[in-house]
Amino acid sequence: MTGVPAELAVAKKNSHHQCDADPEIFAPSPSGDKKYEDPKELRHLAFILDGNRRWAKARNLLPVFGHRKGYENAKKIISSIAKYGVKYITYYIFSQENWKRSGEEVKFLMDLLRELFYSSSSFFHKNNARLLTIGNLKDLPEDIQQSIAFLENETKSNDGITLIMAISYSGRDEILRAVKKIAQDAMAQKINLNTLTEDDFSQYMDTKNIPYPDAIIRTSEQRISNFLLWQCAYSEIFFVDKFWPDFSEEDLENIANEFFRRKRRYGR
Image (cartoon, rainbow, N blue to C red; front, top):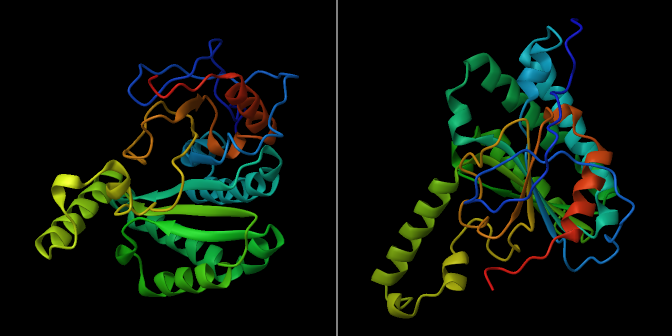
């Protein structure tokens, strides 16, 4: 291992942004103004889990060790998130672009997904968590598709928190698939395009019946990266200058405190 720090230098400025804003890095700072006892405001947190490979490289480790550490950290955050009133959490696990990575790395990530879905039933039940998945799941190996379906059914009655995993996901692809479904229903005269509303459109998305994310947190980079493009229109966005394996419960608490200090006007 080298002496290179695990986390990047934290930016001095902090700011919040909608997804059409010029981004700056949010540097979480401690606050005693804890308002997260109100569960009605912060319902849905979405995470772009970035920096696993660079975390490993900083330690002279293979990328697989970074993905393993990132997986462990994702489980830890799930276990600590209920106190903020969050009912939905979305993890951007694997994008459609990730299929372009080396065959060895993709194989390891698929094996990690197999481990997650084969052996996590007790974890989900312990945390009263329900599993949902979004993305183009047909691209996944058949056995993983089957294990996802099994775990979704196994946890469907859990009502503490809903974990949405974006796998083989692309925001543009999700919108395109929704448009194709709408076109098919229009041709079958099941819907009237002249009266189609945004709410109607949302029902054709992978995230139908799921509230839009109140906040999106991305570690290590400052991009949306094709994630929840339809849903993020009024999400608060936090860019945290840390690799995902180093994102801590303290970072989460500081972001929650900052979120509750903000006034969300939705353009009004």
